[in-house]
Image 1 (cartoon, rainbow, N blue to C red):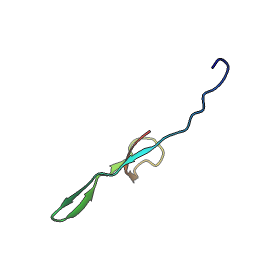
Image 2: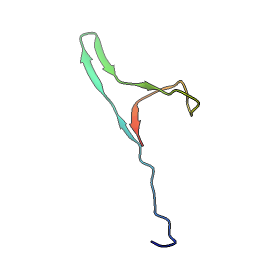
Image 3: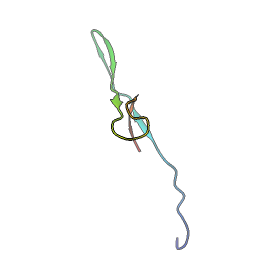
Length: 48
């Protein structure tokens, strides 16, 4: 592929972890930290 760029598509995989307890269902969330986009907001675990 000399002189050509490969076609690339961003992929984002989300994972929803849920467990049922006597007090009700729980879902795993994480909170963005640092000087990044949407800092301080809660989100589902993901992999890019």
